[in-house]
Structure formats: structure tokens, C-alpha cells
Amino acid sequence: MEEELKGLTKPPAGNSLHLKLLRALIVRGTTTLRPTITKKGIRYYKAERRVKNIPPKEIPKLLERLSREGKIKAELFDRVIACSECGCPKVTPKFACPKCGSEAIETIELYEHITCGYMDSKEAFLTTGTLTCPKCGTELSEDDPKFNMIGTCYQCNDCGNRFEKPETVFICQNCKKKLTFSNAKYLKIYSYTIPEQTVREFGKEIPILEFIQEKLNKKGFVIHCDGEVEGISGLMHPFSIVARKDDFLVVVDVVSSATKDEMLAIIGKRADVPADKFIVISVANGPTKILRRIKGIDFFNGSDVTKFKKRFKKYFQQHF
Ligand SMILES: [Zn+2]
Ligand SMILES: [Zn+2]
Ligand SMILES: [Zn+2]
Image (tube, rainbow, N blue to C red; front, side):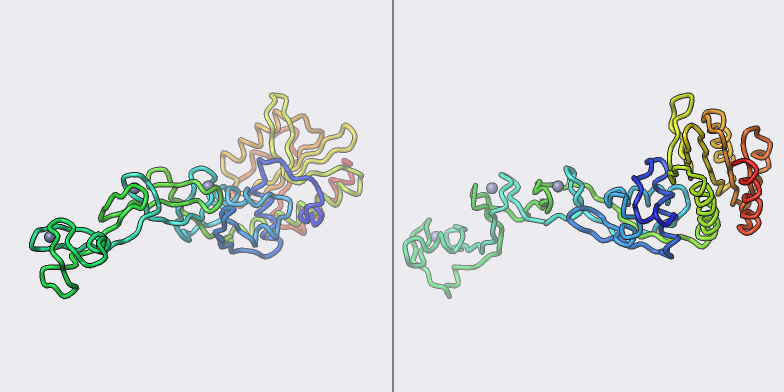
């Protein structure tokens, strides 16, 4: 398990990667994860350090899945505008001309010659070199009561358009794509905590799986944690441990919640997977009796780890 966690073996199959992450977090005592918003995406650095062989960009998806499955708790951390093209959650807001889309806009002060009603920027009144109304030609002075600043507006340097409200656009800091309200993504990002109950459940599972691996290792099995096996149907089935020695195949699965779905999944896997030993350990509180009655399943209760180890040792000596 230690080796597996340090990433010395190849990445496990995708189907149960989320459980691998969860176990690694629990083993290292990490129960809270906060996101960091970077140009390259939402990162959970603490989680990345715990599982070196899972690509960082996969981690948010795995955490989402764990949260959907009720194994960890998500809490809204923030909302971010993200790029629709590359997913980057860092964008720079910019003002743009509503007519031509140019970002080369600036605020200008508008003046009015009240006598004739002409309105323009100050520069327009200064084109002759002295302050003069471009419409009626009257010479003006700064303190002329008929010459007034009436407000400010935006002016586009590219198309000359003047407007009160600029459009807001967002420039992706990663791929530089220009985004608007209609094509930017507005995402929720989450922090996560691993609840006590999950720590307890997996806290049992981890030493159990380590124990089994150790036994199989000593017998010369090649082990994949969170591996997959192809069934007779062609479907791929995930297991906590997949171990092979020549043609002999051992699969190990852990029942953690004892829901009907979980049990049916195991029964289905048993029917489809041609394993020589199909070991199931329950660390769940719920009833798992039905699994004991399925032919071809070597069932163990794992609620007491010490007792489990004793029983498994005996079983292993007899069958391996
Ligand atoms: Zn413009
Ligand atoms: Zn005038
Ligand atoms: Zn982008």
C-alpha cells in the first residue's frame, strides 16, 4: 500500500481512482481540502501531494464524484468566471465598445456651449488653439457661464463611438480568448471535508487491504490496487485489489455501505468475472448476509480488524 501510494506502480484504472484518492487522504490524515484558483485550473494542492500518480486536473473531478457518492462533504467556496474554451478559471475583465468590440476605449469629459447647444469633448473646442465653439465660432473662456462640463462618457478610439455604458468582456489568462456574458462559464468551486464516518469506514478498510496485499505479495502475486478486470461480457469491473500469479486471478472487493445497489453490483461482478478467488470484505454496518450465500464468494466481516486478520490468515493458509 505504501508503495502504491507513493506512485511506484502504474496509475490504477479510472473507475475507482476516486477511492484511491480518498484512501490516500485518510491514510495521511488529510480531512480538509481547499481549492486554489490558478491559470491552469482549480487545484487542490494538498490532495496532489498525497497522490503523486493522479494527474492534478483529474483531482477536482474525483472529489466531485466522492461528494456525489456521499463519501465527502462539499461546501461552496467561491464562484468564478471561467473560459468556455480551455476551462481556465482566471479571466481579466475589460471594458469594450458596444459597437465595434474594441477594448481601446477611454472616458472623456463632455462640454456644452449653452448658447448654441453644441456638445463635444474639450479637445473639439480647442482645435483652433484657443477655446472656441466649433459650431458657432464664439470665443469662450474656462469661466464662461455659457461653457459647461456636462458629464463624462466613453469614447472608442477605433470607431469613434460615444456611449455611457461600456460592454464588459473577459480575457482568458490562459488562452487569451475574449469572453462575454453569453459564452463565459460561471462556476461554483468547492472546498471539501472528509466526515468522521468516512474516516472510520475507510480507516478499517485500509489496514485490511494492506494486510491482504502483504499476504499476496509474499506468495509472488502481481498486485494492482484499484484495478479493473474484464468480465465475460466484455464489461470492465473495478476491484480494490486485483492480483495475478500466472493464470491464477484473485480479486478483492470491500463493501462499505451495504446498500442494495452495492450488493447487486458485487453479485453481478461475481457472475461476470472469471476470478479463481473472489474475496469480499464488509466493513459496513448494514446487513450483508446475502453475500455469504453467494457461491464463489469468499466473504469476510471486517468490522473488527484484528479478528479479520486472524480469520484471513487461516483462510489464506488453507487456500493459497
Ligand atoms: Zn468602437
Ligand atoms: Zn456655440
Ligand atoms: Zn481559455
